[in-house]
Length: 230
Image (cartoon, rainbow, N blue to C red; front, side, top):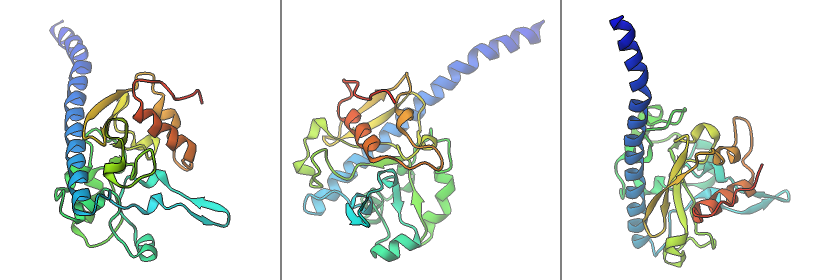
């Protein structure tokens, strides 16, 4: 009888403990994004107001197709093939690390991440001179107006980074995500109806550009529901 009571109590307590752990992980995630925001300001201050460059924002026509890979804006260091073509290694938020603005590699990882791009996955690569590295935060690389100059971006209405939107598997939190604005403010975009995952690519799918732009527009306007039905 006693064991049955204990089992019932454990069953009642476990969901609450799980929520408490997720809440604490969300706080750490927000802290990471806040440090990334400070890093972006310091980087821009040292680089003539420019945000970190990303190859994935290049809009170059090739065979009448526009090269644009918004899903790869969580990439911190490029693979060998890409880095040979671009003559660069670090990309996007990874430049904050290479410039020693943010010297701690753990900052780029959300403790709620549950897929293949955790810090443990890349721990050895951070110690190596080459090899692709992905993080858990998505970098926009520019403002809604297309500017890469930080001072040209409307501070309080422009999202610059968030939890990863790279794919459904990379969605760190199940019911929302942390978002960093250009004015360094942070907010939690609640998504209890799980609309955002509907716009994320699953394995083997390509991220459509219009989906990417719609998602960032939603992050710019968190008070308004602008995600249409899929």
